[in-house]
Amino acid sequence: MKHLSIKVSGKVQGVFFRASTKDIADEIDVKGFVRNERDGSVYIEAEGDDEKLRQFVEWCHRGPDRAVVSKVEIAELPFQQFSSFEIR
Image (tube, rainbow, N blue to C red; front, side, top):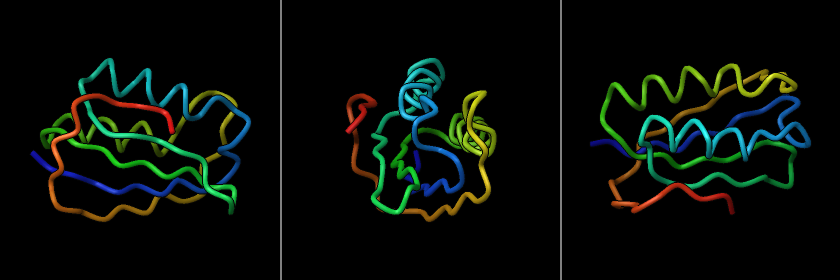
């Protein structure tokens, strides 16, 4: 199991990015959280196995229909054992 921090930049606020992120996380069983940042980006922490996280990160590069993703920055963090995925 891995823990990733993911910063998604572009037109990612006001386009249902957080709600869509929770939907996809719940669908593929990724745990963690998503929140809007003051700089207009979306910040995500996600935990899961390699394959689930690969699918999740792939989705983050696209986002929901109305989003325009310009950049995705990823770092690995220590595993925290989140029990669910939440919008913060």
